[in-house]
Length: 355
Image 1 (cartoon, one colour):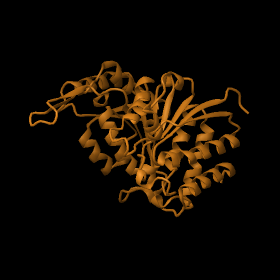
Image 2 (cartoon, helix red, strand yellow):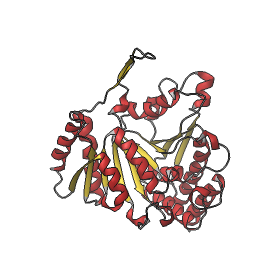
Image 3 (cartoon, rainbow, N blue to C red):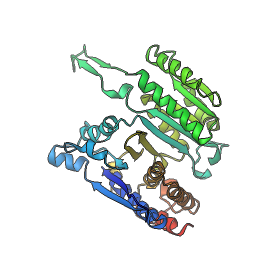
Image 4 (cartoon, rainbow, N blue to C red):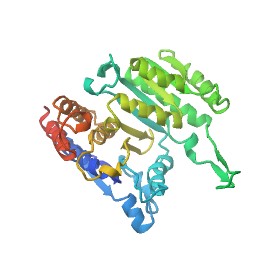
């Protein structure tokens, strides 16, 4: 066994988050066994059930406690019994902000030609990453409502862009391109309409790009990018954009790779503790029915391991998922006939055998 065991906090959350996290943990333990990794996993019951029973989303001191782990895994959040999603805001968004996880990292890779939704394109044509600014923008909750419920109601939602926040996410995108041999970075904004906040994005991008002359830099308006991703996804290698636009464009990216059930993400603080999550929702209508696709959850574990320096383990999981897809050992959603549990079993089996 390797020294200095990796410590992981696991929060399954709500709905199918529980179903798929079981399979993610199954695969994590399988790859740890094969690769000789020493891991410590602590599972937390934070979610709607606990919130409804106690009125508390997270115990005091939770954010500081999370910092003691090498990484955090979160499943999915959302429960119709908590219509305002108060618990999810505190657990998920709170963790992002309190731990300054300013990089939302979304790899968009298609693992099978059968999953590619675009005519005349193949899986090999879809391989880019999105760097979404994760702690500013419209999601900071600055604003208010005046005269609510009246004909004169006014709702104000402020977008926050700081030089520090914009520069560090753009620099992270260029550093990633440099370290991974990617030749271009494309920044998406709407500076033709959002003349103040996105003027800051445009100027900062030009200044940071000048420090990386070996990397091609491109600028697009976000609406034009949405069209371009459908017309020619192979034209993109690294994309960087603001919080709201990143949220939207990465859902488009998820469809390019086969749907939400194939998409994982990381919320990264390069100097602190990062958190990883599949990007799909909690799907309460199918919870417990053994039909949810666990691949996103499993691939998210691979991302978490790679972030922690366990590249071989991450590669082994990814290859197992590719092989399961090729053999149709998957849920109906991605071409197979297995249930959630059997799909997780198939990945774990291939991880152990290296098939």
